[in-house]
Length: 203
Ligand code: ZN
Image 1 (cartoon, rainbow, N blue to C red):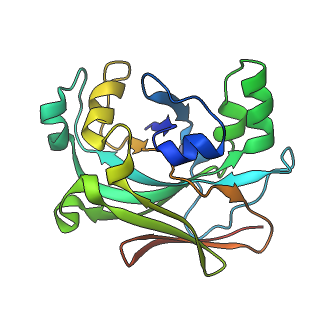
Image 2: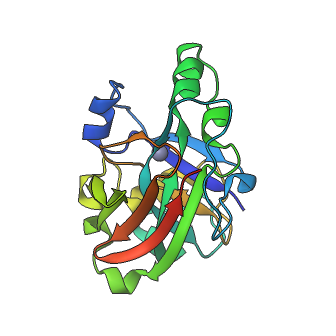
Image 3: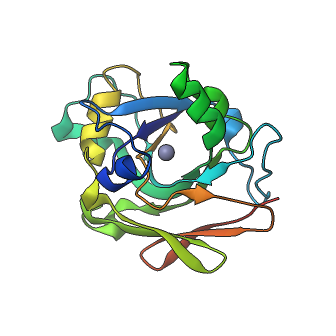
């Protein structure tokens, strides 16, 4: 399976990193080895002094598809989740400045947290999902999918032009504002509405 990630999908996050608003969705991939094992802590890698949390709504693909029309995109998923796109921001900034790919900063071991899944019917309108990240009990990121520049169905349609979507693939739909560093002993909890979908310790 593959993890397809969207960058710069929320205007306020684009501003906080001083990035340009993209003309098309920014797409990158994470490896399956990046997935943090359940019940394991996130270990800050030695090569970074500035790993950031990015909380993101996740979509789990349930059938094979390519060139998916936006109007059929909702038939390709039944489950919505929440996760973290851990990013070695210092390394990413370095790679970006040199025009190099981001994988080392985004796809290292443990950099993809995939929380529990919820049936989409339970959530109602997928374009109005409220979600939050708490760090040590304080809300640090507070997002709503209504603020996405490209909505879930548009993202599925867009990425499927490039990559055949397979059963079990996961789309990370981008992070809202409020990204920031994690340090040892931090505790990160992600919520959709009031439902906790993951709880991670940092080491
Ligand atoms: Zn991200």
